[in-house]
Structures are given as structure tokens and as C-alpha cells.
Length: 143
Image (tube, rainbow, N blue to C red):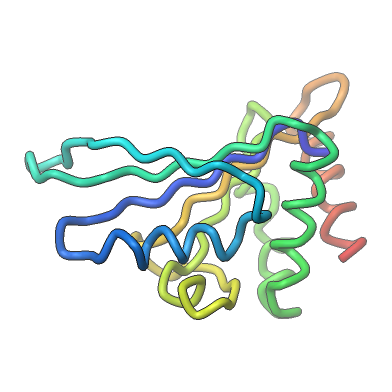
């Protein structure tokens, strides 16, 4: 199971905020709230940060499964191959989804930094990275 699912996307000053919001919403269940806040970039540039979180275990697990199911077979295979590198010591899976494809209604892994960041905290006892990798591997195998 997934304990918590969090997604975030940055709206750069050159981007249309409605389009970035649409891209983020395209990978979320419809009832999830999206928060927006102003942030300062590394070089002092003004940006907006969109965040959405699902804290209900069943809903978070279902939302992650839905995202994984929308990925292509090759991309799911890539995640499986890279899973030990994608799960950190806090049992959190890290994925970057392509913002442009999400805007078009597709879910694909991102190649660059302009993306939707997805973090999924795996629920496993004891909380060990290898147990989290196994739990997430099970979710991928079940898609």
C-alpha cells in the first residue's frame, strides 16, 4: 500500500498557469485539491508551485496504480529496472512525469527537468528500503 502520494509542478513565468494546472490535474483523481503558492527560483525568478497530496492510503494506492497503468509497457519496465534507484531510504518512490504529455492527457516519464514530480511513500513494516522496493514492485506487477 501507499501511505501518501504527492505531486507537484512548477509554473515558470513563461508558462500558461491554466495549462500547467490542466497537466497536473490530468494525472490526479478529479476530487483532489491542488494548492498554489508563489516561490522564488534559484536565480531570483518568480514562479508558482502547484502541489497536490493524497493522504488516504486506499486513495493514494489507487491513484498511483492509475498513473502506472497509464504508462506504456516499456516505461513500466524501465521503472522496474530502476526501482532500487528510484526508492529512497525513507521508502519513497520518486518519478518525474512529462508535463507536456500530461497536458495532452498522456502519462509518460519525463526526460528533463520540466516535469510533474511524483512522490509515493510506501507503507511497509519495518520501514526498510528493500521492503518498499518489493511493495512497489508488487504494484507495478499488478498493473
